[in-house]
Image (cartoon, rainbow, N blue to C red):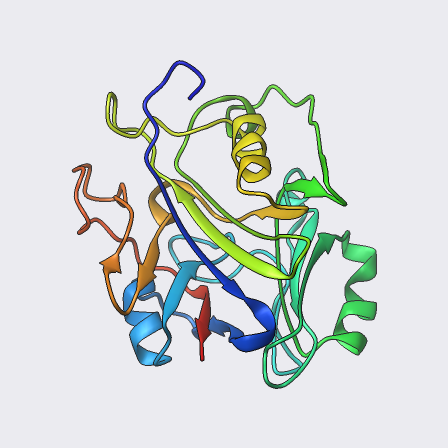
Length: 230
């Protein structure tokens, strides 16, 4: 793809038949696989942006109506969307564009939510960005979550920084892959060394970058993730 070698891992599931939940740790980090196992989940994917020294979330996070993180001014250049869960059972998942002014409405309407970005697909259309910053224009490992028209949720990780094995994508290329996965709504999550997709059956599916080796062992500790279980 794009004249490059790509390595992409995906998990898909019908939202109405599974429980989707947001997990947030307090002042510490753990591997995505560890968070998934602790939640007795079938699958887990890393969440949104955070301070790597303190493991404090730097985007809006709400779990069971309790606000555990807020979007910092420095994140406004990319955080423009949200994954929101309406019900206690975690079977009603919405993914949509959302700015900070809408957070009070989100807090009233939803039970749990995780802000991230940028939005890749909105109402079936690719969202285009003109920023020339390295975050948007250079290839990096990427994590995304989205929905198909039939309600299927798709979690995906694109490996990056491994020349000739998994070279990563720009934001525009990430959006293209989201379209190829059939998504009508899609949101970019934290990427880079954080990008990890795990399942209870297969373990870590992708090749996390933090150990600089193209294997399944290089997970980075993260403070939050999205988990799914029956």
